Image 1 (cartoon, rainbow, N blue to C red):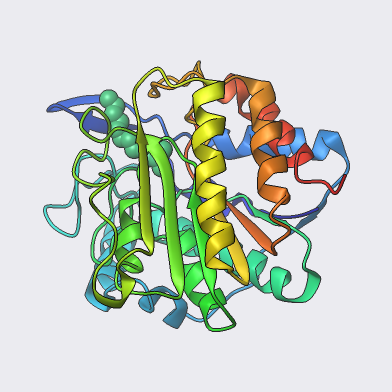
Image 2: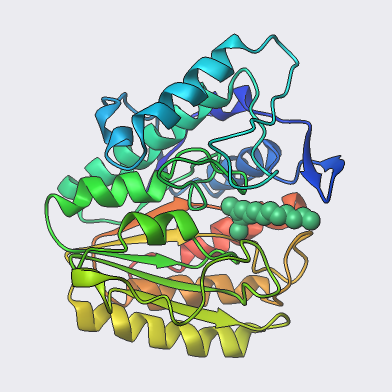
Length: 317
Ligand code: Q9C
Ligand code: ZN
């Protein structure tokens, strides 16, 4: 399989986030992506390529220019070692800006777009190892460890070539991605996530959010209770995959999060490692050109194993 990766994300390493007014350690660590690429290299079965540069217009297709400009200027103006919690263009206290944040975020988008471009020519699954993640980034705000919405930018790019289904299997609801395509009937957004009444992002991901106007019926949310395990998760995934099949997309974009793992430090679900292979093989059974985009997952000790287990389920059987 083709994997797209760059170590440009190392420029973005906030030391902390703010939880209920207190500074706490930043969960979205650079080591997350490093242990995943290390495990993939050790597996030795994959072709790892670097991202190419895409024009900024791809980011403007999803994000407001004034927000993009703000992130660029404020990142570049920061002195080394400084951290900014902006007072605007931000949805919560989980997206601090460092001097390298803009560059790293642009490169994460380039990773997703490079993978999307590969998909147009190869038809084989492609994995975009993005960091920082993206699905909480909105039209004009950063939040939840996300700055630019990598999956949404890639889906926007692919949607010029055909119908796109987005399956979001991160623990958290992908509010930014949902909102990007909320009015459209040619991009389906389906998300499995922890009940937002008890889990971040708290304000979206409820079942009554179903799209608007022409987009009504093209957003589907499957919130699940805390404590959800392998069996219940697979049952809901089955429903989500049926929705996708019914939509008859030309492309599938999967926002992949490993924060559903039983030992995730900020999680609440109880998925075990072997189930990630099953999730992937059910996804592969759709037989669609599939772009996998990395989102969350915070157990650095087990992330390498989760990622290689997941990728092994995508191989043709
Ligand atoms: N007490 C992603 O998975 N909440 N973002 C942390 C800690 C922020 C998750 C709460 C969760 C953001 C991409
Ligand atoms: Zn998440």
